[in-house]
Image (cartoon, rainbow, N blue to C red; front, side):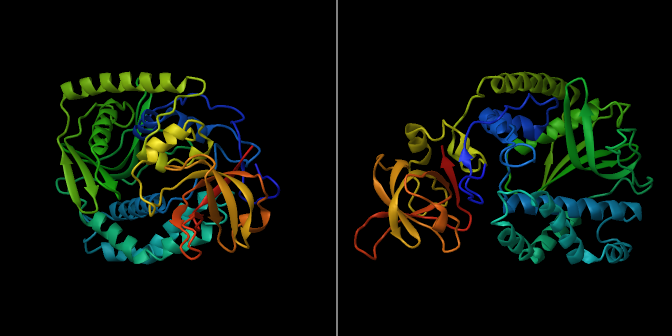
Length: 417
């Protein structure tokens, strides 16, 4: 909620209403609930005093934007190549296909706009939107190379004689039917008896062959293997897309630095996996049903949490100290709760520490803010702030050795009631 007309300084308060339990489960949702039920609940609760959008306004994360636009570009190109019967991105017809799409660079810029559009009207993104957009466009050549790398490894052997699939179940009409032989980008698979669904980046299907491919733009993770096994289970159990209950006989994780072939699960493997995800789903939903949902503070998950400013557990001095123990003064992950005392200079405040790793409550520090930051003219004495993503240093110029907390372009400040 805007406070004192601060454009981005919102009051830290409890949600207007906690979200209901999700009606469907996915790999990413289960992972999020198992990491921290509180984070999911805070992110999906109602905050009508902040904005009209669903949940809490999300932050813009450059790696997420890059991943989204790469997936969008690959889906568009793959669908166009398949429609024209190209055997790969290096097929003779592929040049004409790309020309019709406007070329790689033009298509990537279109996909960039698609990735940015959801953040328009998001009050939390207004101050950094132009900065992140420019950073994204500055990586056009790199992203183009990554798209070409992933596309170049798509293997279509064994389906040369098949008709090429250009259909995609229409979400609006909710009509789902068996997919034809061919290559199909972005196929959503469902196991209705499990209440699970999952979207495969690519399903390649012939009379005797079925491959599921998932493109990954980040680091390798053991979780991705579990994700692919879940996709194999969902494909096997999807009675509409796969009415004959065919098994996937090839699972491919396509990373930027190479492909990883996962062993396809057997019938017994899928039976065991089904029991596992039923149990894990029950446990995750039970943890979410608490009031409030339980928090699971952990450095890795908390540092990436978009709603940690709202989490009471995170700001407990003992918990906060344990999470950040061992971080150096140059760490990009430095959060603090401070009470402003008085002006220190035109762009700085004297402040007292409430919560800050390795600092006793009441310790005096200096808070520096950028010239154009909204705190420069709008902050007031006694304001209690929770600050995310700041940097700690020592003021050596005045030989005071006083600790300085410096905000940067990606830092955020929230007023605690």
